[in-house]
Image 1 (cartoon, rainbow, N blue to C red):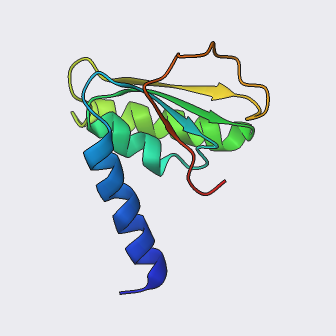
Image 2: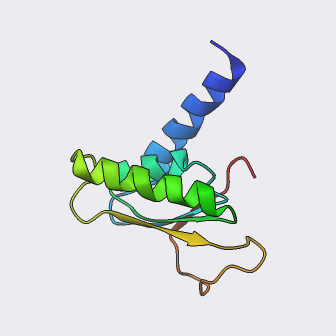
Image 3: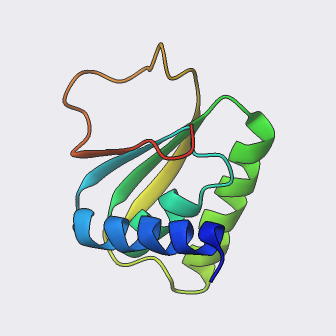
Length: 103
């Protein structure tokens, strides 16, 4: 198994153990959104934050496709926010978990 594949597997296992249904999760620097998608599948309310508008469009499209395919549990949701990790538009305590992998 390649080192990259091992890392991805560990990331998803950690998210699976760490994210609970109905938790509020921030995927900071979400990029293409793979961590946000996994948290969403686990029933979280997810905010995917990134500075790249193109990446955020892709994340929003994938979330819509997941919902259409029935992959989003009841009560889970996701939204994208364009922003800077050094000046986040959220109050302290807004999230139960913050994912900041690959920044």
